[in-house]
Image (tube, rainbow, N blue to C red; front, side, top):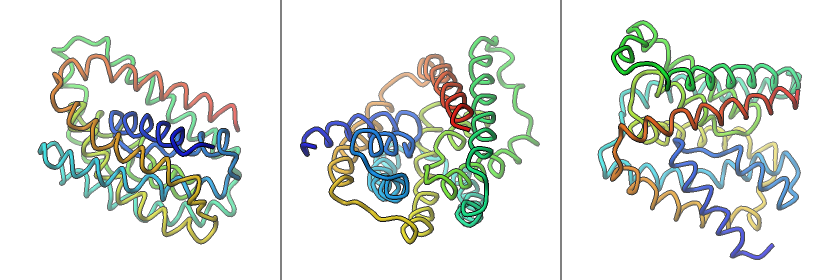
Length: 253
């Protein structure tokens, strides 16, 4: 495929993943397997390697805008790291169909919660999240993101972003903190997956270049927008996407 086309596809993915909190392993995997024709194992390794540079670029951009909650990000990263290792080991034994159903069900449930939250009155929003849940959420969602990365070669962006929004961060802060968290998850995933699959640089380089450009531009645009409007429109959109992804995963199972 022409390098210009892969760069353009990468740019679109870079913009999308920075809007949705980084990662984009599912999008990379989809393009590499369906458009570029890579095998699943090669696509998993290549997608993680391709995802790391734009994530780092996005983190630099978000950091410049002072949007990252490092305390929460490091906590999620700490829980996710061992989960990546466990997931990469379990991937050799776990039934992929069962895993797809479980993950799909969790994503769909989170998506439904997001959609329902968008219809609640503003006065009740602050009572949605107890202090206890906020203490548990980093471990729960961080571990799930790590398992998704370890088992399937995904970045784990969906559960990480979901957890941050559930904890009450506004959309821009959640996207920035998610991107920061995923740098650690993806880096660990690369270490675990690169030995089991081949990195196809000819397929990944164009996507990487385009996604780096998109990851650099989008954070600056997001920080210029009204966070209240972003929350109003993007949270239900993210919820619908999670429901679709969840149903797709369950059907794959």
